[in-house]
Image (cartoon, rainbow, N blue to C red):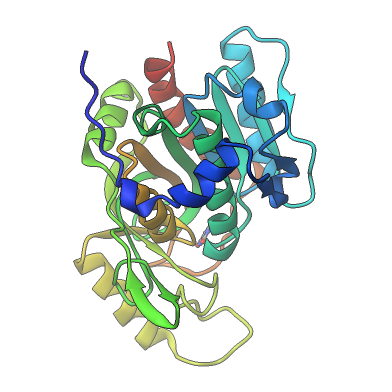
Length: 301
Ligand code: URA
């Protein structure tokens, strides 16, 4: 079967990465504690999916679940544990990305470079890699709902942007609709609420998510409700801290298969406080993981 190459070659730092592949340079993936000459690059040659989670406990739990589902005894663990906890099992890399876009951007760029090295710069092979974030969020819907992101927006309702060379650069922050359809299809038998919608990725948990239960006094309840209502009108279903950046960087290279699946911990139209029991929190988190695993099982039988 002919596989269409969607990658934007010009947006890949090929000059640098190819010199690494040609062994003219060594690249240190510093935050993961590995380098382009380590044997781990060969160990990952059959990489098919990268699953990112905010917390390291979750990346470990998901790696263990996937190992069990695939009847695999050994999980490869990356050496550095200070920043991200990273595991490889069953053709899938599970890694934490920390909290927020600055942290996740480091994980993403280093993992994108890792993909390049593992697949020896073959962009058709690189594009076959599926990316997912499985996370928690606030929502404009009931707690316990699972939201699959259609688009990531910043707190000003605009796509992801960065100041590059001091100039504003806007990224495409849409998520591929084909992936969303396939995830719904893989989960058609589940009985909890799975919806799709826009996701706000804010730079802070309190101020940019318009919370009035933080430490700083900058606005009141009325202005908060206005912001939430505007978001709702624009089709926003949930609010977290990573979606626009994730979509922005992956679209820049041209990846065609990626998703952000979050459980909603709190309906922000009612309250700012996340006040779930440990059991509820675990239930909702595992529901989001199940949605991902049901798709992953179809992708990597
Ligand atoms: N994560 C967020 O970023 N916001 C919430 O309200 C809950 C989880």
